[in-house]
Image (cartoon, rainbow over all chains, first blue to last red; front, side, top):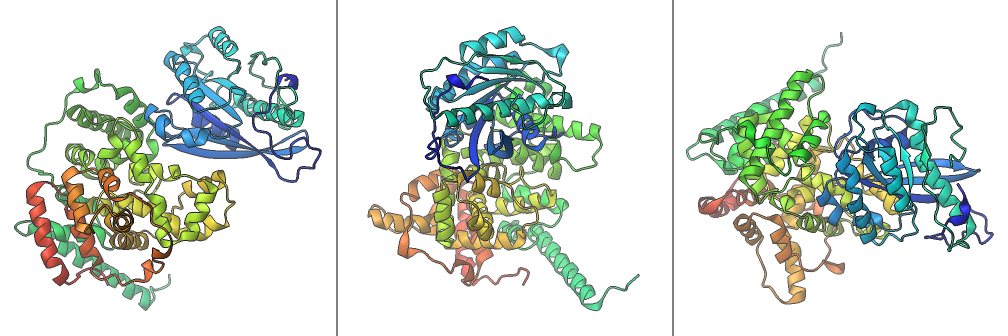
Length: 227
Length: 392
């Protein structure tokens, strides 16, 4: 991914000042989307590595984290997994939008309404004063259910393009796709890391092009940047 | 094989005899005319709660003033058509595998899940003012597993229009309001923990699922869940938030040792330990409620604002029973946070005289209507004289 187009929405006090980092940097990512699209499974897959066979409805907000290493730097990725039911968004989830570094929108490729509802989720996100320059990615989950797909990739790509998001199509369930789940979060972490080290000098940059990651089954090292 | 040592043997006998005695007392209360609901409340609160599901089937309806001779008919299948919450209920129930006993055959579990969906939709249909929330199914499943679908429908309906009413508003504003009560309770007992949590800006969402599912969503051992339900059914609708505070306070050292930031503290607190000493915590929650009932907190706030005369504890419960919405009590009473020198630090060491009587009396007002209020008033008259007949 080209770092040249990124801005820095939340510069850390010491970022880029030539001072050495001693603390692990923290990237805070919020995961939103309709009920039952697989938000919890995705975050489990990334943070825990396995697909949990019994996930339940998330009530309120759950928290998971994983420390990753990117180009020699240890970065703590904090993932806030939210409830999908509308009533929780309004008054409960607000607190967790504060100071997020990235937003992950999730829809279910086998359920068109979860895709059409993305509009509402974007409004929701904007309503919580998430700066427009905070990176957002779009994730179409449950790709393993090939016979049931309702949302064509082309449609999703167009939407992602229009909203300046990266698109990933993946399956939290299929172990062969787990690389791709990692890629979502690693990509964001790379992007955020790039932003930080650029010290926001490129605020006027061109928005990034949406791209679709085809499932990759070759085992890349986890430390490499997937973008 | 080693013989059971004498002291252990003695303990077992002691435990058994206590249990037997309690069972006898419960049946005595059930068989008296009129039924001694106050005694049943005390039994539900005191050590061990209602002991068995067989007893729960008999006592839970009494605690909720549900007439078991006049149960509404079970609904037909048309329930599932044009119900706005159907899809959400379906999604949540189908995913709620963990709530069923491990080892239960799939077809039996699936049958219960269908019953669960029907109960929820039935209550929602009969009460269009109620709105389904994710987590409601965690409460309903507990009733289904203990008392079966027919009785569960009646109990859950009563519970939903009373204890759970605020959670079932169109928005969660009132739920949030009740959650806001958590920190002041913590502040009363341990200001250091309170201040630490405030600095971390942890918020109260870690306790949301505790509150709106009565801990059914977070405890994996069903025995603990039903024990808590005994307690909550016998008490004031705000008791779950006191219990939440007690859990946080029980973990005070862990909290203070935690990194002081939102994520760390949220993470720590939302992972509820499964080996909590439930009986001890129930006693503590009861103590806290008696010592800091909503009116107790509000009284000082009211004095500061000079807008209310001293309110009795009982007033709160009268209010709660008239309006049946815990949030209303908070709204009216809890105007300003209590701060500084008025804090009482020795709450947990104060004598526990008549605690269960007080709690039981307080819980009584949750029962309904003028008749219930009359019972409460007479209960208040005899309460001070009553000798506790609970486990030592």
